[in-house]
Length: 174
Ligand SMILES: Cc1cc2nc3c(=O)[nH]c(=O)nc-3n(C[C@H](O)[C@H](O)[C@H](O)COP(=O)(O)O)c2cc1C
Image 1 (cartoon, rainbow, N blue to C red):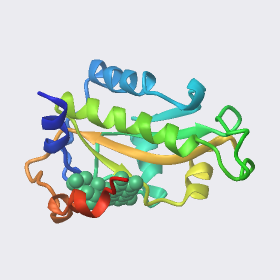
Image 2 (cartoon, rainbow, N blue to C red):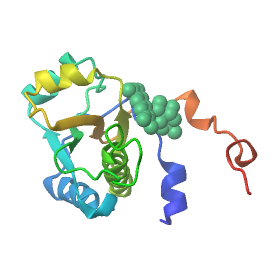
Image 3 (cartoon, rainbow, N blue to C red):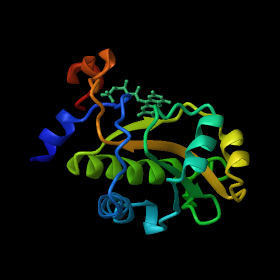
C-alpha cells in the first residue's frame, strides 16, 4: 500500500473489537514513534501504554472516551527536555513539545493503520485530571491519547470523515 492509500483509507475508529493487539504489532507501532523526527532531536516524548484493565479504566475516569478499545497510548512530552527556541522572543511561552508529541503520535497512528489496527486520536480530556489520575510526574505534559484496536463489526467512518476543505481553501501559494 502506498502512503496515499494508507492516508486515504484511515478513519477515526469508534467501534473497536475487543481482540487484543499482538505484542509484535505494538512494538512496531512504538518503534514508528521512536524514529519520528523531533525538534533538535531532543526526543522529549514519553508514552504510557494503557494496557491493563485498570489503566484503561483510569483513562475512562478522565472523561477521555476510549470507545472500549483494548489498548491506548497516552502521549506526553517532557517539559524538562523539550526544545525551546533561544531566538524566540516568546521563549518562556513556547516550546516544541506539542509538535514533537504530535508527530510521534501521527507516526504511530499510520504504522497502526499499516498493521490493520484502527485508531482514534483523543484530545477531549482535562490535562490536570489525566496527570492526577495517572500520577504523572509534573514534567510529563499530556498531549493526546491514541486509542488502538481492530475494527469491530459496526466499524465505519463518521460523517465528518468525508468533509475535507479543498486545497483552494487551505493553501496559499505566494
Ligand atoms: C487534535 C485532535 C483531537 C481530537 N480529539 C478527539 C476526541 O477527543 N474525541 C474524538 O472522538 N475524536 C477526536 N478527534 C478525531 C477527529 O474528530 C477526526 O479526526 C475528524 O473528525 C476527522 O475524521 P476522520 O479521522 O475519520 O477522518 C481528534 C482529532 C485530532 C486531530
